[in-house]
Amino acid sequence: MTRRCVEDCEAVMTRETLRELVAEYLGLPPERIGDADNLILTGMTSMTLMKLANQLRRDGWPVRFSALVRTPTLDGWWAHLEQLRPQSETAPR
Image (cartoon, rainbow, N blue to C red; front, side, top):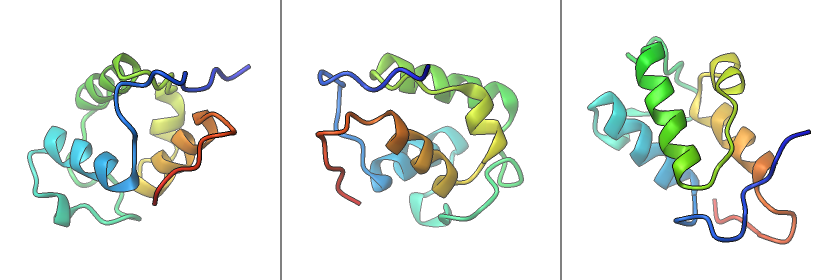
């Protein structure tokens, strides 16, 4: 069973804050990260992905590393986070 993000998540996650976080880990400007870009081909190593997943977990998002690897795009990761979001919370896009 997948746990959901608890209501006391450190910060509200939007697609743009996710993009900024990914860009920070890749050392790129956020505008260089497209929604459908393969982040592995953009330079995301497995070690960097583990660090990013751990950061998301510290922020209250119980992400699964396997889900991030399976769909290594901003769109895929956003869909995974949406599945973890509490049903009552509406996310800004």
